Image (cartoon, rainbow, N blue to C red; front, side):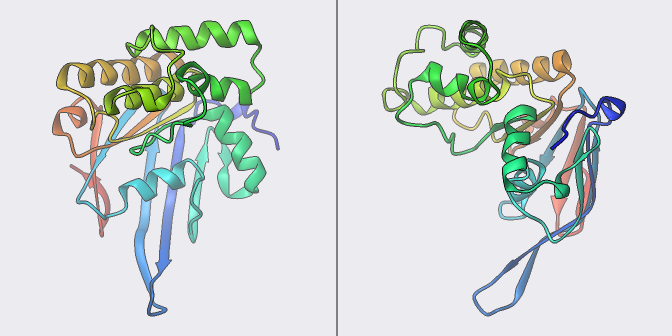
Length: 234
């Protein structure tokens, strides 16, 4: 797999005519995404809102190549995701994607520092550099003194911050966040939004946020609403 797209490095995230269906119990196909088109430039912040169940999280999963889709194209900086097999997609995600999941997906057998450093380890970053980058990410998310704790020793808000630190630690080209402030108090929520935005601006990442929070969405450069009719300006 060649993920070095230096000649197209500034294209950002591009989605063209994306369609996805699920098979229901009565052998019918349920359309969850239909004709989705989106371009998020490097360093741009786009917020997506919409009713529950409309497919916002599914759309994020497709952007990260965690879910398959039926037709259409998704590319990041010129790399077409449909051309990658499962192993190549996993390697591509480890290098290029930071994902803040709504359910955290923090590994219970690893301490906080190990969870945050996982993308760096997967990308072969050396021990000292990994330690320094993890320390910076923990400090930025207010977790500087919690690196040795296990996830079960943390509150829901602290777990959310671990997930965010892990998402930004390797300066990804694509930063995806599914309700990243949902378990945080307003002050920490504002701080986390500052961190996500600053990371995108500093690294040139395309930042896509899915949220029900009007406060979080208002920070975006563009607000879009997902419905059965596709993505429209909010």
